[in-house]
Amino acid sequence: MIVRNLKAARNSSRRIISKNWESTRLLLKNDGMGFSFHITTIYAGTQTEMCYQNHLEAVYCVSGQGSVKTLDDGQEYPITPGTIYMLNRHDKHVLRADTELELACVFNPPLHGRETHDESGAYPLEAETIE
Image (cartoon, rainbow, N blue to C red; front, side, top):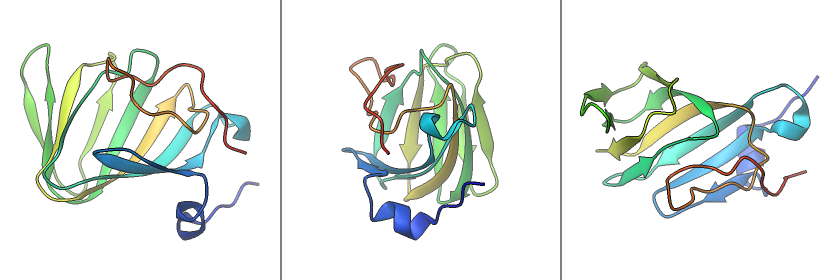
């Protein structure tokens, strides 16, 4: 059994901080579950363009207000507590945070731990592992 605490993880190397967001990686590839699980905070007033070419992602909104827009078709969807969206086609998208967003995110294949977005908005398939 694997048991982790979010508060403790936020005070460890599992917390990754970027310009528009921070992500605490609670479950990673080396845990052997076949997916990774993160609690991610998107900072208020930011827009982040992403395209996970190497991963599928499901995102559940715990708190906050914002929107996600798919760039291929221009569809925009409100993000509020209780909303889940799934990037099942490696969708190129923009996530906008009107207020601070707290999101629960699942990635398949799982992340190694130290990933941040590259110039295309993707996470690399291989990255430094957090122990």
